[in-house]
Length: 212
Ligand code: B1M
Picture 1 (cartoon, protein in one colour):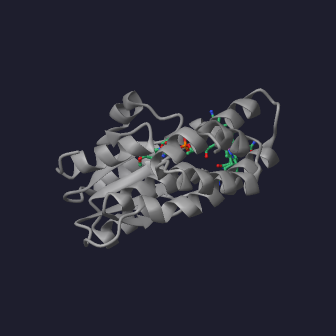
Picture 2 (picture 1 turned 60 degrees about the vertical axis):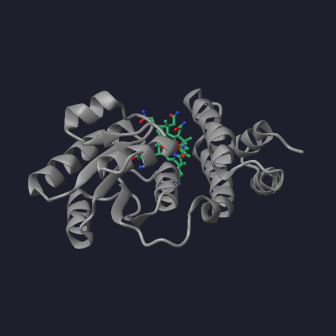
Picture 3 (picture 1 turned 90 degrees about the vertical axis):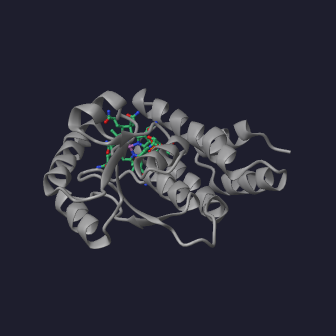
């Protein structure tokens, strides 16, 4: 039986077929989808990030690894989501303006769906104005902003400023992404921050007043 570390290695090497096969084998062996994501797939992308930082690999290799991870996530998504009960709360999610990274954002979206939130995914490169229009249209309870680049953190700050200035009732803003910290969230006035997809569920529940 393959180990979670084999999955990490397959993602890091961008081996799409192996990544899918190992994901299926781990599921068949009874490993839960959350463990597969958090302990198998995510560490693979962390390796890729470190290699990129050291100039050992370049954008094409990062893309290949990202595609391998996305294929595995397609298998895991239905398992992470629960069916049935009508969602009580609506959450919007998007990656902020200028930022095209979407894997983390997609994971949060899946986990929120799994926690029975109705999720509207605005995609990547979302302008502050689009967030605001969507928040008004969907009467969202949670607005989730993701940023992976230090250069797009100012866009996150601006989005929070515009959303807060609109004074929408019952609307909480939650942020996350690799360069984001609780200190930054406090600094820009976001209502919540989570470092990972599991915590993102707990924080969203807390923000809408449900016990996490
Ligand atoms: Co990019 N990239 N990238 N990249 N990329 C990083 C982010 C980088 C750290 C790599 C590095 O240098 N080590 C670096 C940023 C450096 C910095 O800003 N300080 C970087 C760079 C520089 C760039 C480009 C500028 C490269 C170039 O073109 N020269 C370029 C920018 C493009 C753009 O956005 N405008 C670029 C492009 C790309 C690809 C297209 C090749 C690809 C993205 C593919 C895709 O997303 N569809 C890519 C990838 C894959 C990465 C790395 C390797 C992996 C990102 C990822 O998917 N991680 C990344 C290095 C790294 O992060 N280790 C890197 C897995 C994912 C599950 O984690 O997104 O962090 P993450 O999400 C986590 C948490 O952060 C959190 O929960 C998730 C699950 O635990 N979280 C939230 C995320 N959003 C949240 C929201 C929440 C709560 C929690 O509430 C709402």
